[in-house]
Length: 282
Ligand SMILES: C[S@@+](CC[C@H](N)C(=O)[O-])C[C@H]1O[C@@H](n2cnc3c(N)ncnc32)[C@H](O)[C@@H]1O
Image (tube, rainbow, N blue to C red; front, side, top):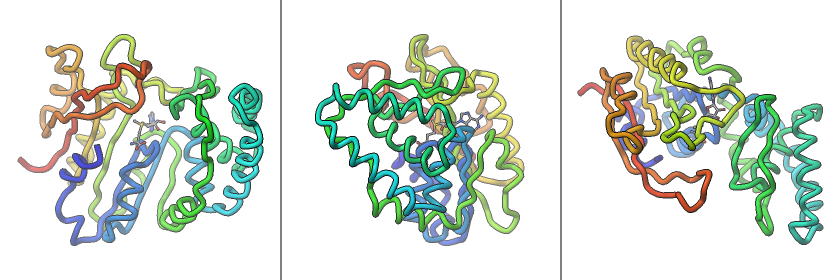
């Protein structure tokens, strides 16, 4: 999606200082790209409801070397286990440790990265009690440390404000001396009864939440800021479903082709339409 998002960013970001705000940062694809490629990015604000994920950003920012040392230990242990059967007990023991959440911030961040790289399909899924419940994946030699990458991101995050909470929290942090660009990538609205793309976190993001987000976008628009928002396209499944067309009727809605990288059934991966909403003047 990055190419399509880039095309719709306002032109001024290439010549004028600005602030980027990502209230649903997740893996931060856009923010990390912007940190390396946009020299006029003077301030970045990232937020996510998932406190375990935000802890990883904080640890990368503040303790990258301790994290690397911790990951080296895990890598060493895991590499000694030569086949999947012997890796299994180690994986489930680490998953239990993560779920107990009584390790240090550095240990918890290390476990998060370990699980992200060794669990099935790189999926992050928790149950109602916020217990990570993805089974082991069948990777032969997963790599948990990219030392240069961690150190590089750590340097780049030094001027980043990192928040944990609901997306509306960012409202209190909007700088008044810089124009702001918001990118919203919320949990997607499921496109079929069986899809569960909303299962990113322990809170559900149902249609009322989608409506609350649309009201928030109206507010951001009235404040004079620019926003971009991505979501699934309900018309893939039901051509009469105008949910987002009605919700964002005042704004531009573009339908683009995207390749889902995570789906319940690997075989059903395909290009489907997604929507990108923005408030550039028509
Ligand atoms: C689709 S993912 C974002 C993916 C991201 N763009 C990336 O590049 O990886 C949605 C994120 O929203 C977070 N989230 C869910 N509900 C939220 C809420 N009410 N407020 C803030 N973040 C929320 C989830 O924890 C998840 O990380």
